[in-house]
Image (tube, rainbow, N blue to C red):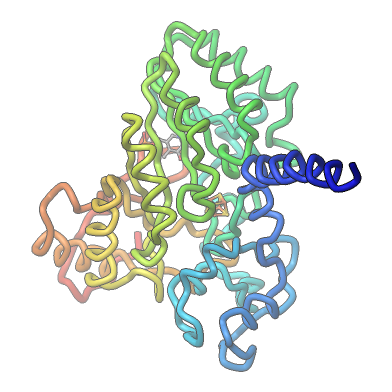
Length: 358
Ligand SMILES: *Cc1c(COP(=O)(O)O)cnc(C)c1O
Ligand code: SF4
């Protein structure tokens, strides 16, 4: 009898823990992300003194790197392009001329808290304030989420605003990362948006398919493809090495559901500022069913000056890419200009060696 009880007790426990494990997979992974510089360095077999200008204790914009993303870095390489995107440096604290805390004019574009109107026909809803990774070049690293970011009442007000503005045909969910919302919260938000007759498309801007691929569950795919709105998903990949097996499977899953997949990158010194790196990225994206869309010139955000590439160098890179790749694998080189009605193409003026900054 005792034996039978034990045997009976076991299967439900096992089943429950597998089910829990499955449903909490991406949350568990996020909870286990690296948040301390020494832990990340130890994982990569690096010593602090191998990294120039390391800031071991960054301020409010702390280190945050999921373990799966760290596993794509090359152990022992202090110049790794993925590591460079996430590792805090002391010169982030410097005040550099021309670099500000709101470089793209998000502040004035906030029409109700959480909703940004900058472009015709499209509105951007800040659906979640947090991210799964902290990118050192992020233009929203100083965004006052507490004042202008999302919470339930604000999202309701933002949806009311979208409802009354018949010029809108597309809503862009951004953040932070909108895919950090739970399936339930996302489903509720999407249902409300889908009920607004003048909307046709739903766009999500997210880094999760690559930094936390476990988030892309079958349930999420079903949620995104089961809408009246046509879904477009814009991922944010800067280097081919970010597209590991997990990301590739996640992206192929989304593609199989009929979701249009696009990528935007930021041109970053020391990360992807060579023709080799950019063409490898485009090729690898296409292997993952993603088309290159934008290559952004860096937003001049306080703390990111060490990533800047001049317009002259950027233009020269684009010429080399065009000479190497089919046109559909060449992204558009653009810059965000505060107050402009669209992204501004970066004009390539002068000779290849003439750096034009603006
Ligand atoms: C870039 C951007 C858009 C529009 O993006 P497109 O891809 O050019 O349509 C809309 N809203 C905000 C806030 C943006 O930054
Ligand atoms: S995921 Fe996007 S919003 Fe979040 S820190 Fe990185 S660049 Fe910024």
